[in-house]
Length: 636
Image 1 (cartoon, helix red, strand yellow):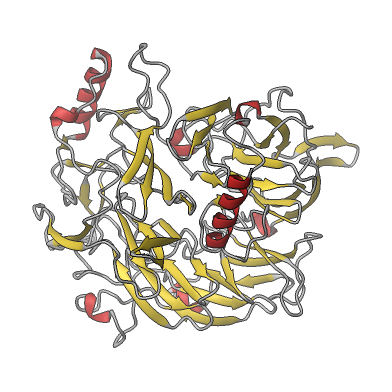
Image 2 (image 1 turned 45 degrees about the vertical axis):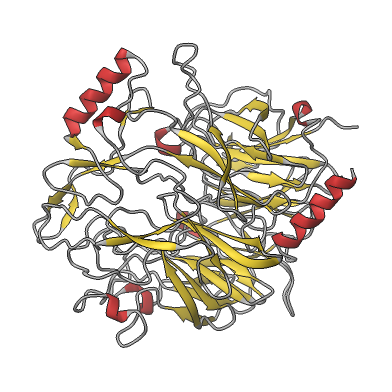
């Protein structure tokens, strides 16, 4: 027990003082997105005893009365309850918990608050005009001067909404009756009807709400991806960071001609992370639009694919580090986690960032300098796309080594069975797939088998940092996107066949040799991979061939007792791993695959829970459930 208490103390110190022990108040638990829980009730010794604690159904029931039809709140039911009919909606949400209450966005146009011990509904908030809350989560805002605790979130239609955390009532002093219209002329590019909203939750610093955005991927020109901060009490705009630099400002020289003008993309579609102690916000900025063709935007295109550090109070630039120059592969920058690195007797405050390529850069988060050497390595330049000028080099750290496959030869084609090989050979022929090297440019005459593809590698979940064990743990995918470009009537280029994946769609079998998904642990102090193991099984394969790993979404959670929980594979299973070895210690079925991330919390009862939203929908997986569910040890 003494060792578990020590681990909890170490973990809590790195996680951030902003999250009380036992709560999970943000998408990544704390403002630094550690995805670490200091809880120790569930241990490697007792995890096999976990059982379902409660289940909540998000889809509203409909009752018919003389007055017509009206929705009635769904009540929590046992996990063994009757099967639900079809007609579900997919959710990517990670729930949060504060002061014994769980909050999450529902794909049925609501934000929901539950008793975190029982799953009993406390309140729901219905969004206006058939809008949807940010699909991946909401943010708890602790009480500040003159303001009670709030639940804040963006919406698909570009609204920023603030609710009283206790009642679900909109804050009347925030914007107009609790709603701020974020679709201001400064970001809309002269088209008020253009796409602008939020898919990830906001974050906060003191009394500021910091928002990213979801904007168009194509066409290239349109809404801006600027990051902004709003007063949490009034909703007034406080600062803006221009993710595509304005003329004459730092970074504007990285755009040829006037290609930066009205450029869309360069947005934070995940969530900014914040060092609350130092007052620094870190913005993981995605690729410019269009993210598969850069012929109309010569240069390295700052601040695309960059982690940018700004003063959290003012938005003033501090430093940046670009992980991909002139992105023409849609690899973005979805993962950013505050960590610390121990070196030569010192503890260095750091940040770990990754694009979808699953190439990890560990930087000093005060200065932005890499803690492991980074070289500019030559990359392929061959393409038949006129005016496309791929950048000749890309940054590559000496350590850690890339966490997943980055190239493909035809000898790497999946051949587990004759049927799989034949199906994949057919996919190659049908899509005109050709081999690729790392950062191979796309073409118009064939489809480059670009690894790790649009799903990553790494996607929006990121990883978990266990400070006591010095490990950053993350799930990775290996599934190529064999994309081919086609010239459009206006002279630009777009995808010839839309988004494609290098797999046999009918059987959901990737067409490269396994592993297709892995859980990987990296020691941040050495840069070395501590362990890796296939994540999931393909049970349709013959005995002896099933340990392939599966595609996954979301992120793991690490706990101070030495456990990792993860439920995001497409095979509908929740697992617990030993943090130090990666050994699987527990597996439980889920009603559907998860599209969001697993989280852990302690209820007011003192009981520890592991919770998830399991609806299906990830990468074409069936949407077959509406369940929010929690696991716990049997009551004492």
